[in-house]
Image 1: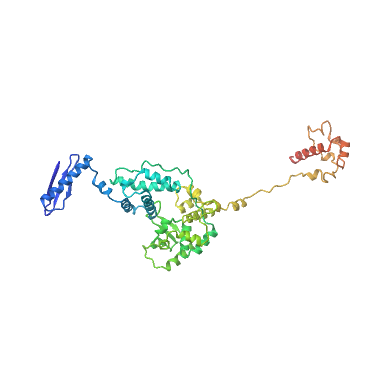
Image 2 (image 1 turned 45 degrees about the vertical axis):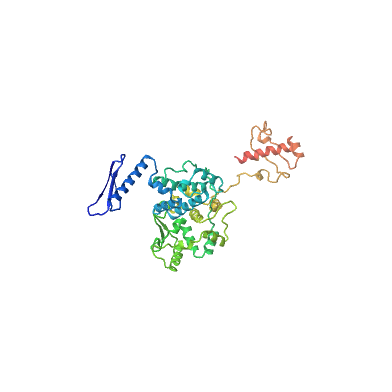
Length: 432
């Protein structure tokens, strides 16, 4: 084992070097003191601590320090490492979920986190299975990061299973109708312009909140550039703006002095639940009779549904929605109740139904009680029928006017039989 102190040329402070038996190379540390005895003592204590850690007598220093740090402090350290790669909406969601678990499960420190506490909290929660799973995933994400950083030895929630959701959404969304959207825009003041932009570009809430003045390009084809750092798939997207929406946005920006790196829309949504209050002002229910909700993300549903109503080619729709799977556009973001189903059916070409070339009144024009005589020229040979068996056409009995008496006298058939025979004759004649 190597263990000694020395001074670098020109330095007044000691540096220590050591190598334990299991180490492959020498470790060099700055001792930060100019006294030889103090430097040797500090190095000796440092080496003894490393030996106890290697023997398992004490936990590594990083774990000992982490054990005395609040779980909220670890959460902020994790957020600091993710700020450059994840959007604010995601980070805020994770922070809020873990803060709630810390409070309701009594988790002050990492050592307090236990699977039994989470299972008990989960069993008493009225949240949907999907939302409960989001809480578990957020907690696991933080704890797994702490394991990788050496702050804890294992994830205490690793054995907890996610709840089955059966593919069902507890809170299905719906799109806004044209009338509802017009009311929302007109009753929301300056935020109405924001809703116009979102419902005609498909921006998500987190993306909208990150739009800077420099991202809005109103010359040479108005558009908004969603930077890669703000989008869900981490890819930059150029979102075309409707010309009328571009003009309204131009007026919106002209009334404000906004620096190129300042947020354009975020100041209008500082109050939590602002969208819900705007819905109430526009007299739009946030929950309909079918249990579908309207929230900010419903504006993206409205955008997709309206694009579908225009009969847009599928590839163009996927490009505008920034979807890689067409099923997501068709089955999730399209509100089928607003599609022009009835209008589409009414536009179908339906062939006209023409009457048969021989109608019933050609045979018996005068009706049942006033039948004309059916001559031999009007009769058709119907093999196998009792009326014609053993007779020629010129031997067919004439049917005289009248209802029952004359027919029984001339033909020997009852009226009911006569009706059945003539019905079949009409059918054969009509079929050619």
